[in-house]
Image (cartoon, rainbow, N blue to C red; front, side, top):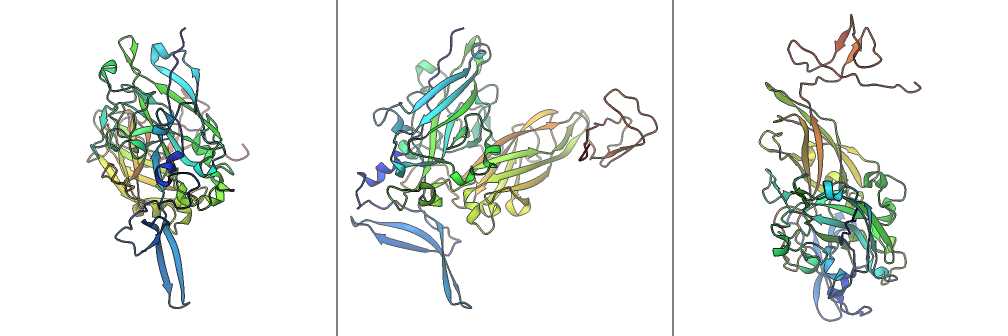
Length: 483
């Protein structure tokens, strides 16, 4: 069959610095603007003069004086760090598309189902220029939207079967969507020349989703690697999610485009989110140690969920509990005395289907049951909430993690950004049963080797049984150690 050759440009270029420092090697670079202190933080702004006479905020510090020991402790709260959309550097007139490679992994069913699996290979375009190493690079797949969140109408996102979809996202983000980030260039959405334009040739295409899926690119992360598993491997976190100068990083995108009539509706666009901060040494000899922590994303970056819910829906009754372990990865947690909870303002959960009384649920970080994670940068929040489902079956749930600092998308420069709190997002599903399910119990007095067995003279113990003439139950195999 004819292959569908797709030009999906999701590139990285960390040449953002040139917008601020002029020619490379100039020792009289203007200072990058810093963040303003929060009102509830006692801090001191330290201003310095640059060689060309301009003044900027160089740092924000928390200063503590101990009268007992007569010493002063100075702790940097946050330095100037930035998240950029670097698409404009990857296409004419400012750049070229030579940093991109695409392999079609599977297009066998593309014309029939819209499914297309590709491998995106990003080649850093500045080999040898280690000052432009990128961190926490996300290739964002921007789509059309069908849903508006009940919790926040500004959050619009794709329907999993009606709109174009990334089936294997590493997460979802609001950064750089074309509806809210209107400044253009590196601080906002910039139309990608290899994406679809909202024009007469693509009638009906509106890249209106404000919440879009992404794949994460980093040195050592393989094309098909599971991000959660990779972060738990020795050495992965030590590399700090860096995309070094001269490196090639690849990720697999499993895409699905809707079918309208007999035609695949091939609508999409893209953005590339790259984090960076100016290193104190130029060029850095040992980037992992010489790039400060602020080079990484300052917000809770990754969210992983494990569902343990016990929810049901019948013609006469509905209820149960949403129970989910929410694992949050945040680079800054390692330096926060309160760990990951100290980096989080609150957790919000909602669904486009009927599930939560009131439409959504908010959980403050202090209300969640936090457990330490497998590394200093992660912790797990166990959340249990009552639900009243409106139907049985697979029910999607969204989780929003709001950041404490930074708490805003505003990075200065008078850029147009959302007014809402800076947050990260993930989507998971729970299985709403078509009959009530009791708690875990025991089967006493008999045994069975499989389904369809008739059991006599047995006792079933458990909790939360619902009164009625019928009883359904599941036998789950439990294997003890050594058996």
